[in-house]
Amino acid sequence: MSLKIATAALRTYDMLKESPRATPRRSDARDPAVLEAIHTRIRELLVSYRISSQIGQGRQTFVFWSEIEPLVREGAFDDLLWLL
View 1: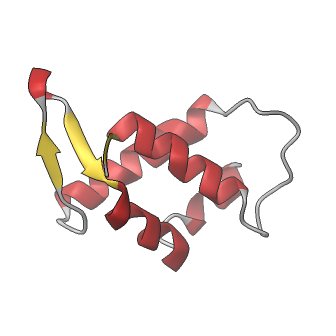
View 2: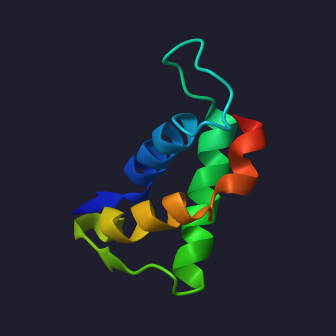
């Protein structure tokens, strides 16, 4: 399934928040600074060709969740856990 980068960042945030090493949730609100850091990491992964993308109508970039999810599980975003 392809997602806009912003939507992939939201899903990644939620996956990281479910990690046993993350701080417990106090609300359903998401921290914009953390989302921006995750968004930046996804773009870095695109530039380094670790994940692929496609350009949709309106020149929006879409990424494949099937490529991001394993990277989250493998720890590619673990250094951002302290921000949560």
